[in-house]
Image 1 (cartoon, rainbow, N blue to C red):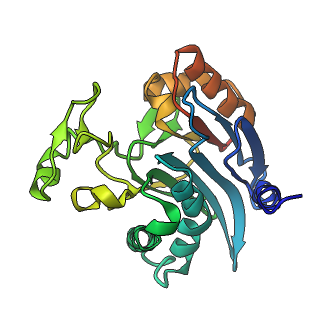
Image 2 (image 1 turned 90 degrees about the vertical axis):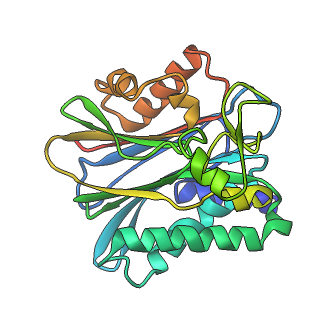
Length: 283
């Protein structure tokens, strides 16, 4: 078995994946009714799969943390691979994580981006979007994101977006203030310097002067109204609205089957991008 194969087997055991198609599931130890499932499908492009997923419950001292993330790479799979191994590690190292969780996450995002830029020779010129969700003791959910991967919560059948889509058209002024520009050419969507279709991302050293890696962070208390959350790359959100995604899986009780069903629905709607999805069910 090669070193890469051994690494892949290790990642599978702890809920990390970049292989397509790939799937997995797990559940909380303190509340067996809380389960998660994930599913990935490679898109129709000729490059390797560039999505990475983290989905696991982890005991940290007296606390249980659900750690969930979608990393959607561009120009390289090395940056999202690095993120899958290091971002949560950096977040949990922050001394104020338990008292000022949102502040700690912002600091860890900035630190991780600096580390990626410092390793640009090794990791290459590419970058990655990210959406992360940390479930603390099955009671509080903290979501952060850069880019257009998205987190959506379902409460009483109604979809609510917890992340922010960082689109160049919405952040044009900030990009121009940094010396960059937003153009629809080449292509058919607004891009930073005519290259990147998101205004915030990890990495992308050649564009970093004009890009932000500052996350939007939000918190949500988990009460009896919460049914499930969806984390997914833009391969789903390009073809499904938040409510359509929620309606698509509201009757699918198994979290892994729900994630797979969402991916299949996106494919049926002609999504051509890499697709990765995590569903966490609370009932």
